[in-house]
Length: 229
Length: 221
Image 1 (cartoon, one colour):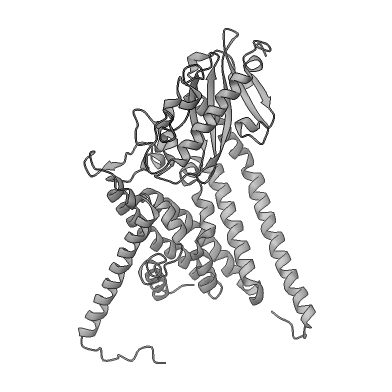
Image 2 (spheres, helix red, strand yellow; image 1 turned 90 degrees about the vertical axis):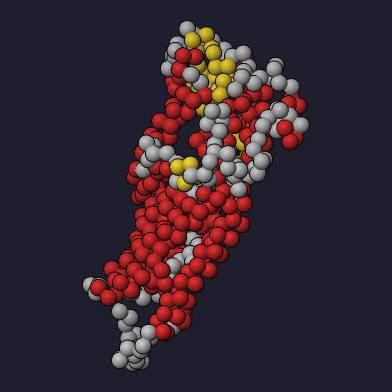
Protein backbone atom coordinates (compact mmCIF):
# COMPACT_ATOMS: atom_id res chain seq x y z
CA UNK A 1 0.00 0.00 0.00
CA UNK A 2 0.92 3.61 -0.16
CA UNK A 3 1.19 6.08 2.69
CA UNK A 4 -0.16 9.62 2.53
CA UNK A 5 3.35 11.04 2.81
CA UNK A 6 4.61 8.87 -0.02
CA UNK A 7 1.72 9.85 -2.25
CA UNK A 8 2.35 13.53 -1.55
CA UNK A 9 6.05 13.17 -2.40
CA UNK A 10 5.30 11.39 -5.66
CA UNK A 11 2.67 13.95 -6.64
CA UNK A 12 4.89 16.91 -5.70
CA UNK A 13 7.83 15.54 -7.67
CA UNK A 14 5.74 14.87 -10.77
CA UNK A 15 3.89 18.15 -10.79
CA UNK A 16 6.64 20.54 -9.73
CA UNK A 17 9.99 19.41 -8.36
CA UNK A 18 10.90 16.97 -11.12
CA UNK A 19 8.45 18.28 -13.72
CA UNK A 20 9.30 16.41 -16.92
CA UNK A 21 9.30 19.48 -19.15
CA UNK A 22 10.70 22.27 -17.01
CA UNK A 23 12.91 20.39 -14.51
CA UNK A 24 14.04 17.19 -16.22
CA UNK A 25 13.76 18.84 -19.66
CA UNK A 26 12.75 15.53 -21.22
CA UNK A 27 10.44 14.77 -24.09
CA UNK A 28 11.11 17.94 -26.05
CA UNK A 29 10.29 16.39 -29.43
CA UNK A 30 6.54 15.96 -28.83
CA UNK A 31 6.53 19.12 -26.75
CA UNK A 32 7.69 21.20 -29.72
CA UNK A 33 5.47 19.42 -32.17
CA UNK A 34 2.10 19.58 -30.44
CA UNK A 35 2.04 22.73 -28.35
CA UNK A 36 0.84 24.92 -31.19
CA UNK A 37 -2.29 25.21 -29.08
CA UNK A 38 -3.38 24.31 -25.58
CA UNK A 39 -5.90 21.67 -26.65
CA UNK A 40 -3.29 19.60 -28.51
CA UNK A 41 -0.95 19.83 -25.54
CA UNK A 42 -3.64 18.64 -23.15
CA UNK A 43 -4.67 15.80 -25.48
CA UNK A 44 -1.12 14.54 -25.92
CA UNK A 45 -0.58 14.77 -22.16
CA UNK A 46 -3.73 12.76 -21.46
CA UNK A 47 -2.53 10.04 -23.83
CA UNK A 48 0.90 10.19 -22.19
CA UNK A 49 -0.60 9.91 -18.69
CA UNK A 50 -2.39 6.77 -19.80
CA UNK A 51 0.70 5.26 -21.41
CA UNK A 52 2.96 6.16 -18.49
CA UNK A 53 0.56 4.75 -15.92
CA UNK A 54 0.20 1.49 -17.84
CA UNK A 55 3.87 1.07 -18.70
CA UNK A 56 5.01 1.96 -15.18
CA UNK A 57 2.50 -0.53 -13.80
CA UNK A 58 3.54 -3.25 -16.23
CA UNK A 59 7.27 -2.78 -15.68
CA UNK A 60 6.86 -2.55 -11.94
CA UNK A 61 4.82 -5.75 -11.84
CA UNK A 62 7.37 -7.56 -14.00
CA UNK A 63 10.48 -5.97 -12.45
CA UNK A 64 11.56 -9.12 -10.61
CA UNK A 65 11.56 -11.13 -13.82
CA UNK A 66 13.62 -8.70 -15.87
CA UNK A 67 17.37 -9.44 -15.74
CA UNK A 68 19.41 -6.30 -15.17
CA UNK A 69 21.55 -6.76 -18.31
CA UNK A 70 18.64 -6.75 -20.73
CA UNK A 71 16.36 -4.34 -18.90
CA UNK A 72 16.57 -1.59 -21.53
CA UNK A 73 15.45 -3.74 -24.51
CA UNK A 74 12.69 -5.25 -22.39
CA UNK A 75 11.52 -1.79 -21.23
CA UNK A 76 11.50 -0.55 -24.81
CA UNK A 77 9.59 -3.62 -25.90
CA UNK A 78 6.97 -3.10 -23.19
CA UNK A 79 6.58 0.64 -23.80
CA UNK A 80 6.44 0.28 -27.60
CA UNK A 81 3.92 -2.55 -27.44
CA UNK A 82 1.69 -0.67 -25.00
CA UNK A 83 1.81 2.54 -27.03
CA UNK A 84 0.80 0.61 -30.14
CA UNK A 85 -2.06 -1.06 -28.28
CA UNK A 86 -3.26 2.31 -26.96
CA UNK A 87 -2.97 3.68 -30.50
CA UNK A 88 -5.12 0.85 -31.90
CA UNK A 89 -7.70 1.13 -29.13
CA UNK A 90 -7.96 4.89 -29.62
CA UNK A 91 -8.40 4.40 -33.36
CA UNK A 92 -11.13 1.80 -32.91
CA UNK A 93 -13.12 3.23 -30.01
CA UNK A 94 -12.44 6.95 -29.88
CA UNK A 95 -12.04 7.61 -33.55
CA UNK A 96 -12.84 11.34 -33.45
CA UNK A 97 -10.22 11.87 -30.80
CA UNK A 98 -7.84 9.72 -32.76
CA UNK A 99 -8.22 12.02 -35.76
CA UNK A 100 -7.20 14.94 -33.57
CA UNK A 101 -4.18 13.27 -32.02
CA UNK A 102 -3.18 11.67 -35.32
CA UNK A 103 0.54 11.24 -35.32
CA UNK A 104 0.93 12.21 -31.68
CA UNK A 105 0.10 8.92 -30.01
CA UNK A 106 2.91 7.07 -31.81
CA UNK A 107 5.04 10.08 -30.91
CA UNK A 108 4.77 9.10 -27.25
CA UNK A 109 7.22 6.31 -28.01
CA UNK A 110 9.86 8.92 -28.81
CA UNK A 111 9.12 10.65 -25.54
CA UNK A 112 12.05 9.63 -23.41
CA UNK A 113 10.17 10.61 -20.25
CA UNK A 114 8.28 7.31 -20.48
CA UNK A 115 11.47 5.24 -20.61
CA UNK A 116 13.09 7.52 -18.06
CA UNK A 117 10.35 6.93 -15.46
CA UNK A 118 10.29 3.21 -16.18
CA UNK A 119 14.03 3.00 -15.62
CA UNK A 120 14.32 5.47 -12.74
CA UNK A 121 11.19 4.63 -10.80
CA UNK A 122 9.07 1.67 -11.91
CA UNK A 123 12.01 -0.75 -12.04
CA UNK A 124 12.71 -0.13 -8.33
CA UNK A 125 9.29 0.49 -6.79
CA UNK A 126 6.07 -1.42 -6.19
CA UNK A 127 3.23 -1.27 -8.76
CA UNK A 128 0.93 1.17 -6.95
CA UNK A 129 3.63 3.77 -6.34
CA UNK A 130 4.87 3.33 -9.91
CA UNK A 131 1.42 3.87 -11.36
CA UNK A 132 1.01 7.08 -9.36
CA UNK A 133 4.45 8.21 -10.44
CA UNK A 134 3.46 7.71 -14.08
CA UNK A 135 0.21 9.59 -13.60
CA UNK A 136 1.74 12.55 -11.77
CA UNK A 137 4.68 12.86 -14.15
CA UNK A 138 1.99 13.06 -16.84
CA UNK A 139 0.01 15.64 -14.88
CA UNK A 140 3.17 17.73 -14.57
CA UNK A 141 3.55 17.47 -18.32
CA UNK A 142 -0.12 18.32 -18.81
CA UNK A 143 -0.13 21.71 -17.14
CA UNK A 144 3.23 22.62 -18.64
CA UNK A 145 2.14 21.74 -22.17
CA UNK A 146 -1.25 23.39 -21.70
CA UNK A 147 0.38 26.62 -20.51
CA UNK A 148 3.01 26.52 -23.24
CA UNK A 149 0.37 25.77 -25.89
CA UNK A 150 -1.89 28.56 -24.64
CA UNK A 151 0.97 31.08 -24.72
CA UNK A 152 2.05 29.99 -28.18
CA UNK A 153 -1.38 30.27 -29.74
CA UNK A 154 -2.15 33.53 -27.97
CA UNK A 155 1.07 35.14 -29.17
CA UNK A 156 1.04 33.35 -32.49
CA UNK A 157 -2.57 33.67 -33.58
CA UNK A 158 -4.42 35.62 -30.90
CA UNK A 159 -6.74 32.73 -30.08
CA UNK A 160 -7.18 30.40 -27.15
CA UNK A 161 -8.29 26.77 -27.23
CA UNK A 162 -7.95 26.49 -31.00
CA UNK A 163 -9.03 23.05 -32.11
CA UNK A 164 -11.41 22.59 -29.19
CA UNK A 165 -14.21 22.06 -31.73
CA UNK A 166 -12.47 18.85 -32.79
CA UNK A 167 -12.84 17.48 -29.27
CA UNK A 168 -16.14 19.09 -28.33
CA UNK A 169 -17.94 20.03 -31.55
CA UNK A 170 -20.24 22.48 -29.73
CA UNK A 171 -17.39 24.62 -28.41
CA UNK A 172 -15.47 27.22 -30.34
CA UNK A 173 -11.98 28.67 -29.99
CA UNK A 174 -11.89 32.00 -28.20
CA UNK A 175 -10.56 34.94 -30.17
CA UNK A 176 -8.79 36.90 -27.44
CA UNK A 177 -6.96 39.45 -29.53
CA UNK A 178 -8.75 41.43 -32.26
CA UNK A 179 -9.26 39.71 -35.61
CA UNK A 180 -6.84 42.17 -37.16
CA UNK A 181 -3.99 40.79 -35.00
CA UNK A 182 -1.11 40.05 -37.35
CA UNK A 183 -0.16 36.45 -36.62
CA UNK A 184 3.27 36.11 -35.07
CA UNK A 185 4.58 33.06 -36.87
CA UNK A 186 7.69 32.60 -34.71
CA UNK A 187 5.57 31.58 -31.72
CA UNK A 188 3.95 28.86 -33.83
CA UNK A 189 7.29 27.46 -35.03
CA UNK A 190 9.57 25.22 -32.95
CA UNK A 191 12.00 28.07 -32.09
CA UNK A 192 9.09 29.90 -30.46
CA UNK A 193 8.40 26.83 -28.35
CA UNK A 194 12.05 26.74 -27.27
CA UNK A 195 12.06 30.42 -26.34
CA UNK A 196 8.85 30.19 -24.32
CA UNK A 197 9.96 26.95 -22.69
CA UNK A 198 13.16 28.73 -21.70
CA UNK A 199 11.07 31.45 -20.07
CA UNK A 200 9.07 28.84 -18.17
CA UNK A 201 12.22 27.12 -16.92
CA UNK A 202 13.56 30.50 -15.79
CA UNK A 203 10.27 31.16 -14.01
CA UNK A 204 10.45 27.81 -12.22
CA UNK A 205 14.04 28.42 -11.14
CA UNK A 206 13.11 31.90 -9.91
CA UNK A 207 10.20 30.48 -7.88
CA UNK A 208 12.45 27.78 -6.41
CA UNK A 209 15.17 30.31 -5.59
CA UNK A 210 12.62 32.55 -3.87
CA UNK A 211 11.27 29.61 -1.88
CA UNK A 212 14.81 28.67 -0.81
CA UNK A 213 15.49 32.28 0.19
CA UNK A 214 12.39 32.33 2.38
CA UNK A 215 13.28 29.03 3.98
CA UNK A 216 16.70 30.45 4.86
CA UNK A 217 15.21 33.56 6.46
CA UNK A 218 13.00 31.49 8.76
CA UNK A 219 14.57 30.65 12.11
CA UNK A 220 15.82 27.06 12.03
CA UNK A 221 13.37 24.58 13.50
CA UNK A 222 14.43 22.85 16.72
CA UNK A 223 14.98 19.57 14.92
CA UNK A 224 16.84 20.77 11.87
CA UNK A 225 18.96 17.72 11.39
CA UNK A 226 16.36 15.71 9.49
CA UNK A 227 17.83 13.43 6.89
CA UNK A 228 21.13 12.85 8.67
CA UNK A 229 20.49 9.26 9.42
CA UNK B 1 14.19 -16.29 -7.16
CA UNK B 2 17.63 -17.28 -8.54
CA UNK B 3 18.72 -20.74 -7.62
CA UNK B 4 21.96 -21.47 -5.84
CA UNK B 5 23.29 -23.27 -8.91
CA UNK B 6 26.23 -21.60 -10.59
CA UNK B 7 25.64 -20.66 -14.21
CA UNK B 8 28.46 -20.68 -16.75
CA UNK B 9 28.83 -17.62 -19.00
CA UNK B 10 27.10 -19.39 -21.89
CA UNK B 11 24.44 -20.68 -19.56
CA UNK B 12 23.78 -17.17 -18.30
CA UNK B 13 23.63 -15.80 -21.83
CA UNK B 14 21.24 -18.55 -22.89
CA UNK B 15 19.04 -17.90 -19.86
CA UNK B 16 18.95 -14.15 -20.50
CA UNK B 17 18.19 -14.73 -24.18
CA UNK B 18 15.44 -17.12 -23.17
CA UNK B 19 13.85 -14.51 -20.89
CA UNK B 20 14.03 -11.87 -23.60
CA UNK B 21 12.47 -14.34 -26.00
CA UNK B 22 9.58 -14.98 -23.64
CA UNK B 23 8.98 -11.23 -23.28
CA UNK B 24 9.00 -10.83 -27.05
CA UNK B 25 6.49 -13.66 -27.47
CA UNK B 26 4.15 -12.27 -24.81
CA UNK B 27 4.13 -8.71 -26.12
CA UNK B 28 3.89 -9.76 -29.76
CA UNK B 29 0.86 -11.84 -28.83
CA UNK B 30 -0.62 -8.82 -27.02
CA UNK B 31 -0.06 -6.66 -30.09
CA UNK B 32 -1.59 -9.22 -32.45
CA UNK B 33 -4.63 -9.61 -30.24
CA UNK B 34 -5.16 -5.84 -30.06
CA UNK B 35 -4.73 -5.54 -33.82
CA UNK B 36 -7.21 -8.30 -34.64
CA UNK B 37 -9.71 -7.07 -32.07
CA UNK B 38 -9.70 -3.47 -33.30
CA UNK B 39 -9.47 -4.22 -37.02
CA UNK B 40 -13.24 -4.37 -37.80
CA UNK B 41 -13.97 -1.14 -35.94
CA UNK B 42 -11.08 0.67 -37.59
CA UNK B 43 -12.17 -0.47 -41.04
CA UNK B 44 -15.81 0.46 -40.39
CA UNK B 45 -14.94 3.98 -39.34
CA UNK B 46 -12.71 4.30 -42.40
CA UNK B 47 -15.65 3.44 -44.71
CA UNK B 48 -17.98 5.82 -42.91
CA UNK B 49 -15.45 8.56 -43.28
CA UNK B 50 -15.08 7.80 -46.95
CA UNK B 51 -18.80 8.42 -47.50
CA UNK B 52 -18.54 11.67 -45.54
CA UNK B 53 -15.61 12.71 -47.70
CA UNK B 54 -17.40 11.86 -50.93
CA UNK B 55 -20.19 14.17 -49.80
CA UNK B 56 -17.65 16.94 -49.54
CA UNK B 57 -16.22 16.54 -53.03
CA UNK B 58 -19.40 15.63 -54.86
CA UNK B 59 -22.88 16.92 -53.94
CA UNK B 60 -25.56 14.29 -53.44
CA UNK B 61 -27.72 15.79 -56.22
CA UNK B 62 -25.01 15.06 -58.80
CA UNK B 63 -25.82 11.37 -58.83
CA UNK B 64 -28.67 8.98 -58.16
CA UNK B 65 -26.89 5.63 -58.26
CA UNK B 66 -25.46 3.58 -55.42
CA UNK B 67 -22.06 5.18 -55.65
CA UNK B 68 -20.25 2.82 -53.30
CA UNK B 69 -21.38 -0.21 -55.36
CA UNK B 70 -20.53 1.18 -58.79
CA UNK B 71 -16.79 0.82 -58.71
CA UNK B 72 -13.74 0.16 -60.81
CA UNK B 73 -10.78 -1.46 -59.12
CA UNK B 74 -7.72 0.54 -60.02
CA UNK B 75 -4.38 -1.26 -60.16
CA UNK B 76 -1.33 0.47 -58.74
CA UNK B 77 -1.26 3.73 -60.69
CA UNK B 78 1.99 5.71 -60.54
CA UNK B 79 0.32 8.71 -62.23
CA UNK B 80 -1.90 9.02 -59.16
CA UNK B 81 0.90 8.16 -56.78
CA UNK B 82 -0.89 4.96 -55.83
CA UNK B 83 1.34 2.01 -55.15
CA UNK B 84 -1.59 -0.18 -54.13
CA UNK B 85 -4.84 -1.33 -55.60
CA UNK B 86 -7.56 1.23 -54.94
CA UNK B 87 -11.22 1.77 -55.72
CA UNK B 88 -12.73 4.34 -58.05
CA UNK B 89 -16.41 5.22 -57.61
CA UNK B 90 -18.60 6.15 -60.55
CA UNK B 91 -21.42 8.63 -60.14
CA UNK B 92 -24.34 8.49 -62.57
CA UNK B 93 -27.49 10.52 -63.02
CA UNK B 94 -30.27 8.63 -64.82
CA UNK B 95 -27.69 6.13 -66.06
CA UNK B 96 -25.46 8.78 -67.59
CA UNK B 97 -21.96 9.01 -66.09
CA UNK B 98 -21.57 12.35 -64.34
CA UNK B 99 -18.41 12.06 -62.29
CA UNK B 100 -15.76 9.79 -60.86
CA UNK B 101 -14.45 9.82 -57.31
CA UNK B 102 -11.03 8.42 -56.62
CA UNK B 103 -7.99 8.68 -54.44
CA UNK B 104 -4.61 10.11 -55.25
CA UNK B 105 -1.43 10.49 -53.27
CA UNK B 106 0.95 13.41 -53.25
CA UNK B 107 4.21 11.62 -52.48
CA UNK B 108 6.24 14.76 -51.78
CA UNK B 109 4.61 16.42 -48.78
CA UNK B 110 6.76 18.09 -46.16
CA UNK B 111 6.60 15.01 -43.95
CA UNK B 112 5.62 12.16 -46.19
CA UNK B 113 2.62 11.29 -48.27
CA UNK B 114 -0.54 13.37 -48.48
CA UNK B 115 -3.60 11.32 -49.41
CA UNK B 116 -6.30 13.06 -51.40
CA UNK B 117 -9.77 12.26 -52.61
CA UNK B 118 -10.91 13.89 -55.84
CA UNK B 119 -14.12 14.07 -57.79
CA UNK B 120 -13.85 14.90 -61.48
CA UNK B 121 -16.95 15.57 -63.53
CA UNK B 122 -17.59 14.13 -66.97
CA UNK B 123 -16.81 17.51 -68.55
CA UNK B 124 -13.30 17.34 -67.09
CA UNK B 125 -13.88 19.90 -64.33
CA UNK B 126 -12.76 19.25 -60.80
CA UNK B 127 -15.83 18.92 -58.60
CA UNK B 128 -13.85 18.91 -55.40
CA UNK B 129 -10.62 17.87 -53.69
CA UNK B 130 -10.06 17.06 -50.04
CA UNK B 131 -7.09 15.87 -48.03
CA UNK B 132 -7.80 12.55 -46.34
CA UNK B 133 -4.58 11.97 -44.49
CA UNK B 134 -1.40 13.92 -44.00
CA UNK B 135 1.39 14.49 -41.57
CA UNK B 136 2.11 18.09 -42.35
CA UNK B 137 3.29 20.49 -39.66
CA UNK B 138 0.39 21.52 -37.38
CA UNK B 139 -0.38 25.21 -37.70
CA UNK B 140 1.84 25.56 -40.74
CA UNK B 141 1.30 23.25 -43.69
CA UNK B 142 -1.88 21.65 -42.45
CA UNK B 143 -4.17 24.28 -43.97
CA UNK B 144 -4.59 21.98 -46.98
CA UNK B 145 -7.07 20.28 -44.66
CA UNK B 146 -10.32 22.28 -44.58
CA UNK B 147 -10.78 21.85 -40.83
CA UNK B 148 -7.40 23.38 -40.07
CA UNK B 149 -7.74 26.21 -42.58
CA UNK B 150 -8.32 29.57 -40.90
CA UNK B 151 -10.08 30.91 -43.97
CA UNK B 152 -13.45 29.30 -43.30
CA UNK B 153 -15.30 31.20 -46.04
CA UNK B 154 -13.04 29.97 -48.80
CA UNK B 155 -10.64 27.28 -47.61
CA UNK B 156 -7.46 26.88 -49.61
CA UNK B 157 -8.30 23.49 -51.05
CA UNK B 158 -11.57 24.72 -52.61
CA UNK B 159 -9.75 26.79 -55.23
CA UNK B 160 -9.33 23.65 -57.33
CA UNK B 161 -13.09 23.51 -57.73
CA UNK B 162 -14.18 23.93 -61.36
CA UNK B 163 -10.61 23.98 -62.64
CA UNK B 164 -10.09 21.89 -65.74
CA UNK B 165 -7.42 21.27 -68.33
CA UNK B 166 -9.50 23.21 -70.84
CA UNK B 167 -9.87 26.30 -68.64
CA UNK B 168 -6.44 26.36 -67.01
CA UNK B 169 -3.20 26.13 -68.96
CA UNK B 170 -0.57 23.65 -67.86
CA UNK B 171 1.66 26.50 -66.72
CA UNK B 172 -1.07 27.85 -64.43
CA UNK B 173 -1.44 24.58 -62.46
CA UNK B 174 1.27 25.79 -60.14
CA UNK B 175 1.65 27.97 -57.08
CA UNK B 176 1.87 31.70 -57.73
CA UNK B 177 5.40 31.53 -56.40
CA UNK B 178 6.26 29.06 -59.17
CA UNK B 179 4.62 31.17 -61.89
CA UNK B 180 1.14 29.64 -61.75
CA UNK B 181 -2.20 30.89 -60.43
CA UNK B 182 -2.67 28.85 -57.26
CA UNK B 183 -2.63 30.74 -53.97
CA UNK B 184 -0.69 29.64 -50.91
CA UNK B 185 -0.08 30.97 -47.43
CA UNK B 186 3.32 32.29 -46.46
CA UNK B 187 5.35 29.95 -44.27
CA UNK B 188 4.60 26.66 -45.98
CA UNK B 189 4.91 26.11 -49.70
CA UNK B 190 6.07 22.51 -49.87
CA UNK B 191 2.66 21.18 -48.81
CA UNK B 192 0.43 23.18 -51.20
CA UNK B 193 2.93 22.58 -54.00
CA UNK B 194 2.73 18.83 -53.46
CA UNK B 195 -1.08 18.92 -53.37
CA UNK B 196 -1.33 21.09 -56.50
CA UNK B 197 1.00 18.81 -58.39
CA UNK B 198 -0.97 15.72 -57.38
CA UNK B 199 -4.29 17.31 -58.39
CA UNK B 200 -2.86 18.34 -61.76
CA UNK B 201 -1.55 14.83 -62.39
CA UNK B 202 -4.88 13.31 -61.38
CA UNK B 203 -6.83 15.59 -63.73
CA UNK B 204 -4.48 14.72 -66.58
CA UNK B 205 -4.84 11.02 -65.76
CA UNK B 206 -8.65 11.25 -65.77
CA UNK B 207 -8.54 13.05 -69.14
CA UNK B 208 -6.26 10.39 -70.63
CA UNK B 209 -8.53 7.59 -69.40
CA UNK B 210 -11.88 9.27 -69.89
CA UNK B 211 -13.18 6.57 -72.24
CA UNK B 212 -12.99 3.86 -69.62
CA UNK B 213 -13.91 6.06 -66.68
CA UNK B 214 -16.99 7.67 -68.14
CA UNK B 215 -18.37 4.75 -70.13
CA UNK B 216 -22.05 4.02 -69.56
CA UNK B 217 -21.35 0.30 -69.44
CA UNK B 218 -22.16 -1.63 -66.33
CA UNK B 219 -24.53 1.06 -65.16
CA UNK B 220 -27.18 -1.11 -63.60
CA UNK B 221 -25.41 -3.32 -61.16
